[in-house]
Image (cartoon, rainbow, N blue to C red; front, side, top):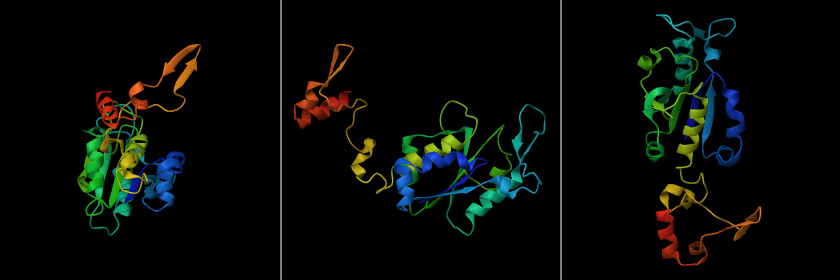
Length: 215
């Protein structure tokens, strides 16, 4: 699967995407991540892409054409692409959606284009030129779509077999608890003892599974 990210700040992804599981997946060529900066498609000599909104109001709006050109470059000659616009007004993203996007690979979603908004948003005509789906990360507003894009790539990638190594590591596919424990069996902090629940030390698999379901 290849993620094509349209963003004004591609450098903001470098640290996260070069480390941990996502970094290993890229290195092992299980996924690809490509960036497209609308500034590279601006005709302005200073590569400016934002303008004041028609109708007034605070803030600036990203011009349509540089974003259209960036998406056009990402689409290329591909016949099947999934375009996602990150917006506070979009449908709220959840794990079921991540599973759906991953399950369609490689038949449908071999290439996913993620468009990151900034400032007061992107000229709405972009969505008329390139039809796509609007997604929001939750009932809050962020300064841009870069963090949501990282969430999308992470949550979708981990659903693809081979990314986590052992596919049983996908928590939602197994009986799991929000509370996890490891050694030592008894943790002492400021003279107070904190113990691992006895059931986890019992070796009784049925009772352990029941505990995990309840907790």
